[in-house]
Length: 628
Image (cartoon, rainbow, N blue to C red; front, side):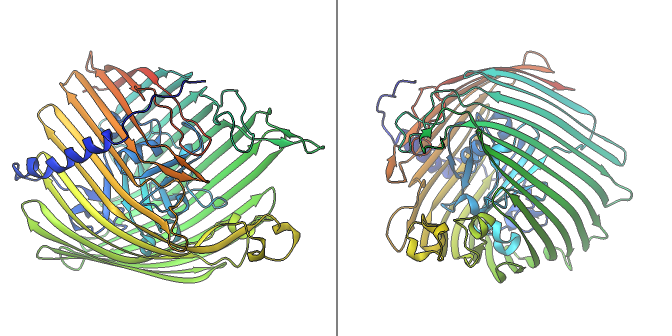
């Protein structure tokens, strides 16, 4: 067992990141020529310059993904997009992404436009994803149900896998690290005339440590090592039969086997924590799409997709959960004049669930109307969505946003809207827990922001407030549950209201060979009926990364500071981690990579009674063709 870390000042990382962010506007203002504005899809369902998007959108580009010390997709998101992470152990353990304090069930994950996640749990399974095949990520922070429906009530994460864009290229990577960690991946892509092709595979394994600490409150601790194995494969093929038209096929498969600590009960009701508990998760998704630009004023998108999540958990006795989603998207965008577009979309979604305890299905039909226009520097966005669900009936949501260009690279933003979260299948139907009459969560939000983009830097600040009602959670009071002995230990219920408010600061700066990024988030997340802070939400989080890139050599460091969090009657301690990295490109095609994660060997409790990895060293080699 690792020794406990000595007490350290808790706010060093926060102070360092704050200082960096305060300096960014002044330093960047000396460089009046702005960088090219990125184009994003997530803010309007159609490509739109980021300067015209009223929402708070973060783009994680290939360079930031390649240089990050993140151990997983969920870890990358909290470092680069300022979201918080709830994870029951190390890499491969069950993970939830919390955007602006909204729970993991309020965050929608899209991979190349395909909705991915478990309808039984009602959340995206980020732990099943590999970083190896990801090209870029867009994160919309804040409610977005008026564009994407119930799953996006807290935010949306859109992952784009690699695609053949030009001359053939290939890459391969092998790496090994502490705690028995191994990684390997191969990827290739190319464009041959009207056909583009991309494919990749990856495999990762980790021996790890026991997921639980000794003396956990339920007596589930087992001193064995709880490791994980993850294998992923991805392919994209596209054909352009005519200019402006592309037919595409996308397929993604991931398989995760992760160990964890738990207990079974013998016939005499004796607790037994010695079995080897495993979570086996298979995710498959496939999509066929047709994108057509008929003219400068008209474009359409048709997509048929299917996604399946197949999970088995347990030791001697297994619980099986199988979720299948089939979705049809039809979208048309009209651009009557330059700077204005109107999008009309239809989504037809069917979800089917088969589990050890119950079977279920539901249908959702949705219509979306979205407008984005520019009036001499004033950008306007308006979204409206109507959902008709076979379980919870009809829900309407809307959103209105403004963005005003101040000049000199600066702009102001304001956004207000409504969102909702639908109950998951477990919350509706799971025996002894689910209640079919549960109502969807509803929320209203407002935010204000200021952004600046300059030749060598960028800066943004967003203040937000979100009020939610009819929160869905566990209700231990038997009197508030349906009649019957099955609910003697409680049930799912609409239990109250919450207030989520705070401030997010983000920025980056590049000067010569030096490159830095920082993010600071302040959050107040409370149950307004009781005044208590919501579980696993820290009042602040800060990240800072600094790199020196001399061409053949790169050295850098990353700092993460997370505040204390309440969790099931316990206050989890704040902590600061420091990661170090280095790269040596000794030929155009080959480079050596090294990193030291949690360099100070901080003892981290990511959730109550769980433990993360300590200090972990990595060494790896990467091959790129045709090279840099």
